[in-house]
Length: 163
Image: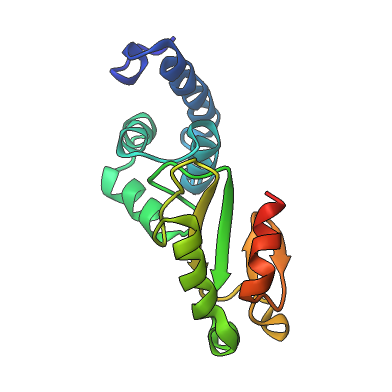
């Protein structure tokens, strides 16, 4: 087992860092593997806190600024714990014009959290997307990988109750 500062915390965390260490061993020295390692690290930990980014940086011998730059640039990486489900409301032009902003305002109040945050019960992470490729179905939103078309406030309660 790796004897890092991370591994000396609690047994559960040590186990997660051990899994990540094994992933890094598979990818170490392979050009362009940082994004793949970060995806797998996020699967292991559920998100990418600074401590995990520092570990990846150190173990892969990549500058921390490169690691944090990739994490902050790509929207699929999260530096905060995520909910069980991700809600993404499309705010591309078609969705915005057809009521996307009203959906965001309703969900903000209904979920009791701001954009980018997770509900207190850990059920949902609430985000916007610039386009989800469903312009003809506007306004649209996604929960996890399911696209909901022509969403309106009346449909939202029924949609949320499914989760």
